[in-house]
Amino acid sequence: MDAVARVAELIRQRNLIDAELAACIGRPALVGHLGEWIASQVFGVELEHHATAKGIDGRFADGRTVNVKWYLEREGLIDLCPVDGPDLYLVMTGPKAPPVSSRGSTRPMTVNAVYLFDGATLVSDLLSRGRKIGVASSVRTALWDEAEIYPCRSNRFVLTSEQLEWLALLGHGA
Image 1: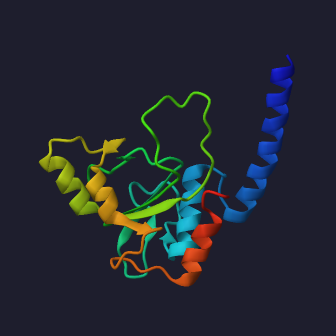
Image 2: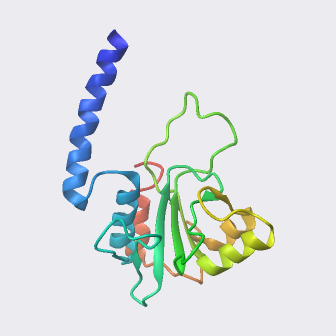
């Protein structure tokens, strides 16, 4: 019973923190909503007014549509829209995950890397290899490497010193 009491207390503490986070972002403190809020603050993504917009979370200043993902580990998978997907996928991840059981591990909410994928290129690559498009689509390591914009510097999407500072705040020490 001591274990149940301890878990109940920790859940109460987490609920208080989640309430504070929700007050900051204006939505429930779920990882998806937090990721979208981070994308709006750090990358200037103008979010859709309704969180239920299918496949598109917002737009960059240049008008390109974007779907934002925040995965607490980089497992090589992305949830993709099979039809009418966004122009871009902005994917923030925690550390790269080894292919082992999650038993006994944690998934802290950190941003260790950020990737910007061209939606059409990503879907085309998967289709050409006979891969499925949808939930947990497996993306080749080479495409992850090409899409990385943080912490590695990319000419495709240059981050300002302010953006780099903000992302560092969310990094592995967060």
